[in-house]
Length: 122
Image: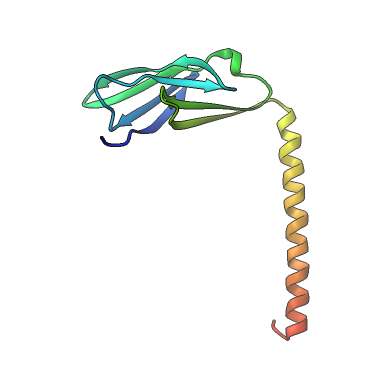
């Protein structure tokens, strides 16, 4: 049997949309899992010769921080992941990360310049 692959088409108004290839008949159960808890079951339908997968993300998972929802088959195989970034606290996380990256870049530039001086390279 061919391996199932789920290709995300998009997210609109909290609704996950994808196309499933290699799907057996009858259609498999596909669940959305957040923090090891099934929060929704996907709807699967044949449409225009394609197997369409849709699921509504519940509002309860939209909380501050980084939230990851696994889209998986009932046997536990993860087909896709949806990552949600919510809240103003994340701005500080990104700024701190950017500040660290800039500091590391400055260290690399200094080390590279020192190496060039020591080896006579320009």
